[in-house]
Image (tube, rainbow, N blue to C red; front, side):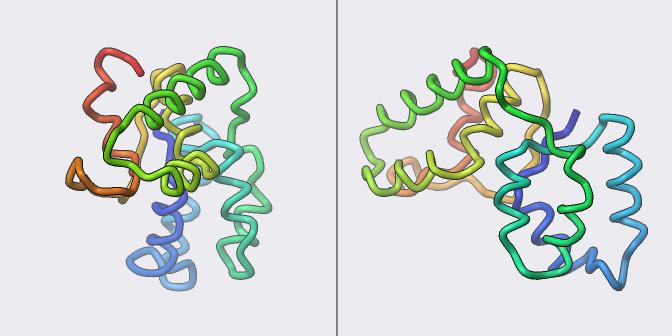
Length: 145
């Protein structure tokens, strides 16, 4: 299964797969979610429904596209993600807190535990960057968190 980061929905809506211009993309997402090939997690759902646009309305009608992260294994992996992020010397505490408060660490934990592929528009940053982004976990994905 491909787990979609919130930014993949947002950028699609705002640009190349605008909901009015390309409804077929959104229909395809529905079809793939039904097949359990594409989806996301409940924390991404929570982020997306906070909006006041057509994407938020679309997401509200598709709660089943967003899987829960309540398993003991995912909870444990989330702890591993948090510990790893807190061990990074170049990251500031405020940026660590911002990262841990969002869906990204849950996406990583879910992908690792369930063997899913995480899809994001985030890009690799210099290791000395103060911000924490999903691609920093590419380094450790083969051996676990």
